[in-house]
Image (cartoon, rainbow, N blue to C red):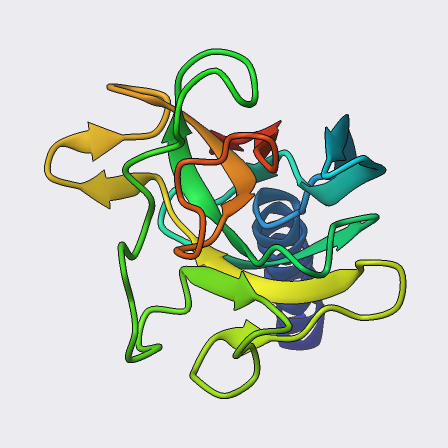
Length: 179
């Protein structure tokens, strides 16, 4: 009889372990990517901006891939998680996670530019057709009491870089929720 008890105990432990593993994987599932688009005219040229990224992430933090196509490669953009207010282009997305992380230690933002991109941490140049694909780190707490979904609405955004930071044409938003 001791053998049957051991077999039942092992079966029970195996079933519990499988259930726990399934629950753990269910809690870390990622959301499908979503797309945001915007068409602008800049200097007589029309650009169809397209930004793709996740619409949700773990509140404690997650590394996400964000890609874009159709951007003006003559105008650099920042890609990051920011507090947003209103439609894209209505107001400057700010504050942004990581702020001005020129040392590249947080990974919370990325600079895409053909005028210096790729020469400093968390930066790269545009690919063909104004394209990019970058990884950024996002989390719900932006700092200074700004928490996505609690005190501010947040989105993964592109916005014009420091060479034309007041230009709202390149603002594209993907609203993000945190679990």
